[in-house]
Length: 590
Image (cartoon, rainbow, N blue to C red):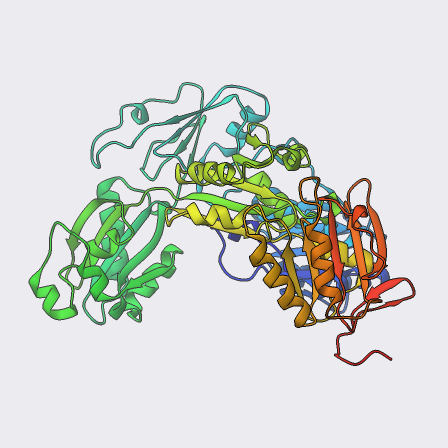
């Protein structure tokens, strides 16, 4: 497991999320080493004194986890505090690792999310006092987007239940918002045209989601979505100052905010152009380049045969800006050695494929929880959604359906994401293992961003309860012939039996399918000894959990139902002290 940087995950900070660990006692150092073992970008910081170590961790890391008293941390760090938007996040853990307190950097700095992660690793209780997080509301400065204006005042209005208008240029994948935040989609005016509403003082509280430059007041917050792509062309050796200045002037003339830049784009011949790369770095955005042949296929208003002769495409700036689709807002404009064009791209919806694990809350990953709280729409089987309703933010739209509606759920989730929403499609275990990921991805196209969230499968949960049956090669097989002909399943069972693989049998038996499990067991019995261990786990990690150990010769299929996973051992699997074990090395049984 590695640390989840909440800002990077939302599209903000790029690169590793460095965590400094500070401890004063042997117990604290032991807890710190557990975190360091799990997080590749975390390290224990040591110095002549604990105070010096804490200051060094503060100066050299994105976040600090201190195994110290809260009062001591406050006194040492107080002189170093500067700005909550740039200060490192700080989490304090007590000596017994009972509590992980998000002390500084709350939601904007990632301390709240970090406290949850620390809690999951150390079995500590996260302590979060940020008002919005405490009541399940998203912080306006936690989306990974630049934010301007009266953040604290509007956040307080949302907390107090006052009416708030969220006016967006388009549907963006924002987290769920409470009912008293009224969402309005108002397409932006033509570039250069005055927006009457923006020229007036806001009446009531407002959240504007726009890439346009708008006047600010004490009742308005502006969120800057990553909507703008700046296409750049240049002569070789163009100075960075020239590119930066040309882009700044082009955005200002069009009334567009540089905070909404998604990336700079150019032809791949310019991938190493120092002036363009320096401009991308100055704006804090990536540089994306395309082959000239691809840019040549983009329809642009101002093609140039001179440019075609030089680089193989009739347009660089306009074509690069429009390569991903969208609307050209700033046609090609030039300086002595550079050209710039700016396009607005449509929002991309977000589909998170979330595995909830086998059922127990403590086997649900922190990332799964984060994605559920990141979503505005959650889609899933009704009984799975019942497990997580307490995790959803106020205002989350829940689309629940019953057994047998897998395809409808997949289509609904993809449609919501294609409409621009932040969607979580949930399933048990891992979403990609006999679950909802594959049907959803059959319908998803390149209009949406897809995030896969792995989960603990029922097979892994069953294996842990049985011992270590998956110590060597193994195979997952479903015995359900609802979507796969039995003839195909039977061939696969035979192949697994002949290959001497440990087999995890999903969907092994139901009231309508009583004979298939017996047939599969007969196939395995024809290829391995009758005393081969077979484990049955019912309701792994859920109420009514039952673990049964038998052999190929003694297992009664009547003990098995659709809530069970059957694990058939290989010829090497044996029972040691009541536990099912498959050796990592292949050797003959004595």
